[in-house]
Image (cartoon, rainbow, N blue to C red; front, side):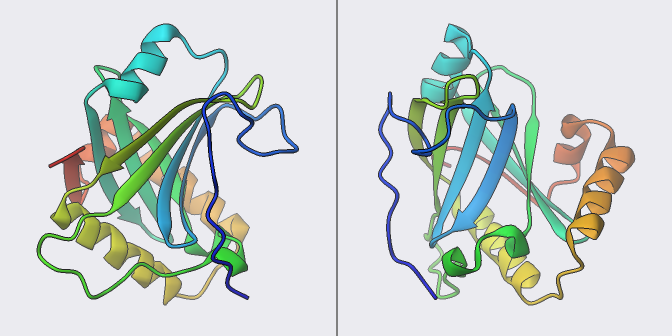
Amino acid sequence: MQTDTLHRYQVGELYHESRKSWPEGSQFNYRGGGAELLLLYDHPTDKELQDVRKGNAQFAILPYRSVLFLLFRFGDGGWSDAPFAWWMVPEDQRILPPTDLTPESRSLLNVILVGADDGLIKVLRLVTLSPHFTREMFACIHRQAGSKWEGIAAHDRHIGGAYSRWQTQARMVKDAISKCASGD
């Protein structure tokens, strides 16, 4: 079953109505026909909030085995990553990205910074990704959707394998298939 319900987020409200704490980290999802980067920071600093809200935003994508890594950084911070697997998106939210892209087509990425300690949305930011980045990201998602799901254990092994191979997110960025800054 496909749902067309859009999430309505607002700064100062809970990201999820029944959840007031989260483990720190980041999550990238392409669900419901849209891309979302969820940043879960425990007691985010003013600088982190400002960097995510208005700082230079840079992105890279790196497919590795069954995982697509969205690499990102805001302001002058270091690179971070959020692994993605199509098969981990709830089935009713799996809407593939469009394939009929024009040379100017750009994906939007909804960036949401949530306090891991209180579950409240601290920052909402909508960024655009370059046309090349958009095409590469969408192609990777289509390849994942067309492949056989190997299961969560294999997914976790592939993530661990990527971290062993590259050791840092900055090294992952060097091998990324596409990079862009917000608004490129």
